[in-house]
Amino acid sequence: KWRILSADASDADLQAEGITRLPTLKMAKPPPPGCRHDDLMEARSSIYGTADAGRQFWLWPKKNLQELGWIESKLESALFRRDESSVLVGILTIHVDDVFAAGMGELSGAAHEKLSVRIQLKFKHLPFRFCGKMVTQSEDYTVAVNQMNAIDSREYVTIERQRRTGPNLP
Image (cartoon, rainbow, N blue to C red; front, top):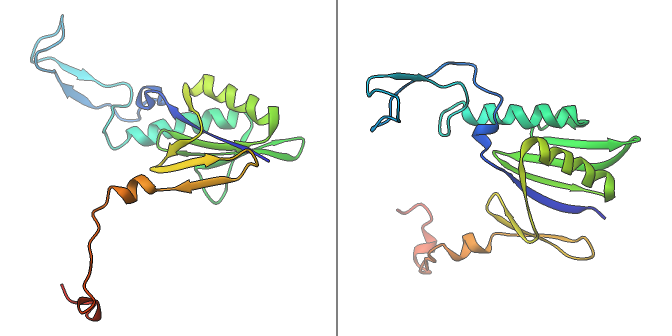
């Protein structure tokens, strides 16, 4: 009898822990006020699209989850669990800047609220899309997942009966 929820991290790259390297950037054209076209800039935080931006953001929720008592899975580093008095009350997984969680009652809800303040999460209401899948939950707690939008956007190709006899043909 757990309720599911999903959230999106607002401006994930700007919430990152920082970066371990110091990239030097050319000035934008036209340069911002007070800068010259030949000035160089040093980035001190993650930049969207760089190879390390996703990793640096990942370290931020991981740190905050652990500080709030969530325990990282030893098998899957993106999966966390929340225990209260030795009882499992919630699970949570993060994919890039999307969060998917499930839990029971007030204990799990309070934990999600604390996390949303630290990581600036925008919660989605059911039904919601998570990693391209439409997720719904009924009153009896049943969860349904489908990818009908992805299926509907595909072009159907009819393969003639004779062609199906030669699966290795181009």
